[in-house]
Image 1 (cartoon, rainbow, N blue to C red):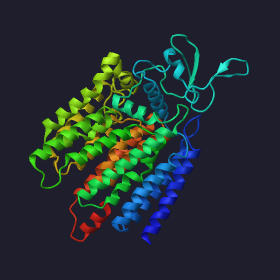
Image 2: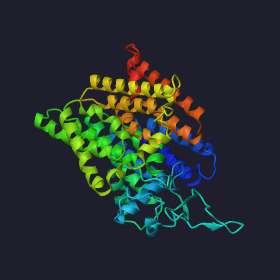
Image 3: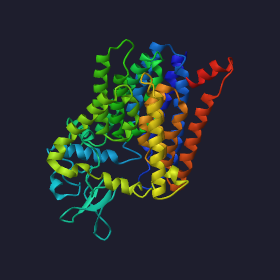
Image 4: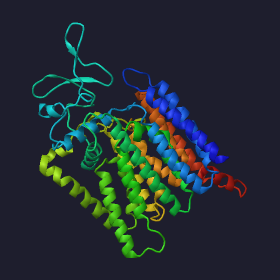
Length: 469
């Protein structure tokens, strides 16, 4: 009966996801409120499905978790990206790389790349009523080529600046785009997202089983509407970094009875995986520090060697251009002047806000290092990553993908408030909204921490454990 109920709720979640993905977006001036409504419905079904699957026997639950993850991922491919245009840039970088050109060598507007442009990324201008060519259509912006200065219509964001994505991310773009025709649109990156979501689900099931916990808790990642939206529909490359970090976590924590030689090998392998994560995107690496607690020298040395090995070929080919648009991006987001730190900005402004944010992050890192249990690093990973997200206060919710696996591993469900509220801000944007949701997220997380610390009576303790599990 429980399995049937879970299946029915999953089917409803899949249907809602497909409907929202196929019909709703925030582009072309559309309000994000309808998509916010569909998202709220998906979260409700997600919660109900999780409550139902907890009573299903483990073997059947594992099958439902994997089947639901695949079905939800496919449903999230029902339409094009609906809250972000980043995957257009991923596709372009992959096309450029597969053509034998470094994506760091030219900005998309460069005339040197004219022969690689495809209509779905660079649609032809259409004549306006007065006969003047104009860029029209969904997601299409206008810019000028360099150096010729011709009108260029594109679905890419920031087409006038070089790519921001590091080398391992670029390798992923090239691998995903290589088997398909250049005219294939959004779906290859989305399909790659489905693969990564399934991989992380399997890794989480293995980690949970190793801890003696129900592998069905991997549904907190695989069925999460936030993951379906950001990892699949909008295909954010952060998911690849998350996969490397979760794999590093699985490798770094040895099973009972491991020998010192085995732990050294594991630490080295974990460092390599963390180095690869860092060369996808820096954000997922905020969950890395607790993994270095047991054998820091091996982890740090192998991670650093991996980063160097990955970057060297690109530095040789393009020199300093390998940095791409990263400095400009940090300035654009307000971090250079301190205005991007919304949480500390409630108290201070400018450089003082930056200083307070740095102090907060260093303090969290020190506490992580002091209190991390090398055999049980997941809580420290969750708190460290979550604290970084709250302090940095990014308006981009997909940065919170790194939180979700560690919510599943620790059962600290209150941290779901971070991606949930960040998604709400994306759909109903505004500085005032961001200044409201960040403190609310902090309050919910702190409340959850206080509830867990409160002494319970013998009768209440099992009930609380049942809820938090």
